[in-house]
Amino acid sequence: MTTRFRVKYIIVESMEIETPVVFNELIQHKTIAGFQRVVGAGFCYVSIDSGKWVCFGESVSLGVKSREKNDADILNHFIPLTNAG
Image (cartoon, rainbow, N blue to C red; front, side, top):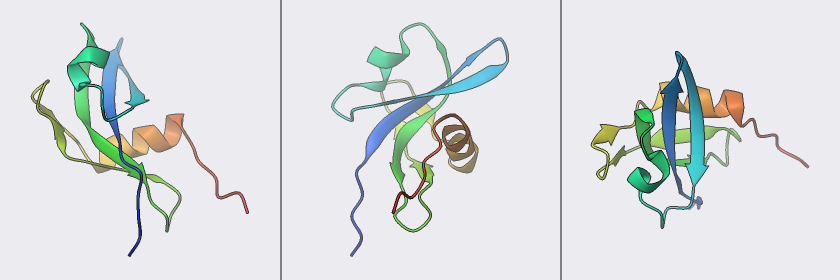
């Protein structure tokens, strides 16, 4: 069985640019979002197999769903990870 460390994320849009924010899952999405325009939200983790972000779920407090692959692509662009070995 593979394990994963899950965190929350939001994708905010400003001036047609979408930017990710990743944070501890003990914090509500709406606390981080404030008055920003949120276009995607949910949970994410780094895949052990690929070393890339995976997004899923939704934010109940914001009423916004994850756009899964689209959101993961944004996280992988802005927060790239490498397999250091």
